[in-house]
Amino acid sequence: MTIPANTIPSFTGAPNTAIPALPSETPILGRRVLAPPERFEYQPSSRWVRGVLGNTAIVDSRHQLLVWEPGAKGPDYAFPLAHVRTDLLVPSTAGDDASAKYVRPKTEFVQWFDLVLDGRTIPRAAWKYAIPGLEEFIAVSWHTSVLDKWYEEDEVAWGSPRDQRIDIAPTKRHVVVKAGGVVVADTTGAIALFERGYPTRFYIPAQDVRLEHLEPVELKTVCPFKGQSSYFQVKGTDQPIAWFYPEPILSVEPIKNHVAFWNERVELVVDGEVFVDTPKVWA
Image (cartoon, rainbow, N blue to C red; front, side, top):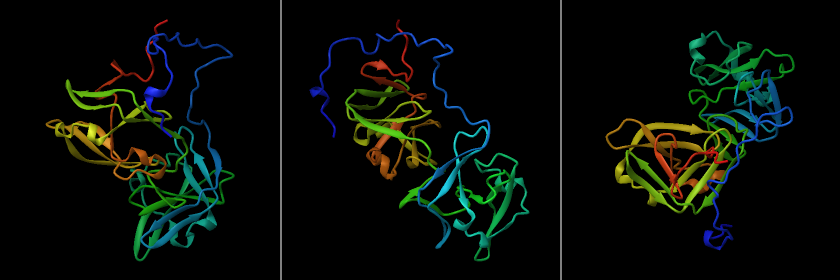
């Protein structure tokens, strides 16, 4: 339920300025750092995960591991061998260029497999980690050149396994976006999206975006937590500054028909002040 902003008690103070200095680092207090692991790490998962090529399920698993490589920010699924069509896999003889476009694995401790189906061979489609303890598990690449679709439960999954939380909340804050000194968006009906490791993003209703100043870009990307995105740039320029999700995944469905801007590429003004995710220290 959304409560109208003008009915929430407040007081006239200095919420943007009366901010103490950040605490100093001490042996008993420090800023939280979500650092990539220094070793292989895993987390059991019980999602229903399926990977499909054409009309054939290559992966069908309800219990798997999320595996992080040393230095990796995100994980891959490692499936029990019985949950993957290993009868369609053969040891790979392809060179490193066949997997160079993959985000992972980066480790050298893997054995590669090609996927062979209906006369088609997909090189380096899967791998086993040559790590003690993971002998009975196998990973399958999420790169778009390998399988056609992935599903987590009954929802299409994008990009990579999900391992982090995104929170969204409607906000009545007055959000103004300027590009090159020109106002390209102005709203009091944005959705604030909070994602670990990223700045706060304000998703602005399309009707509050001045699309006459923007033009679509051919660029498309996928996010495992939000879906497939398309982009805008200011007319006459060549740098994308905004994006939207035509069909976002269910957990962030409210951002449909909303446009977000790169805080770093525009002037983002919130309630009359230039927005910075880490506030200025006024103490």
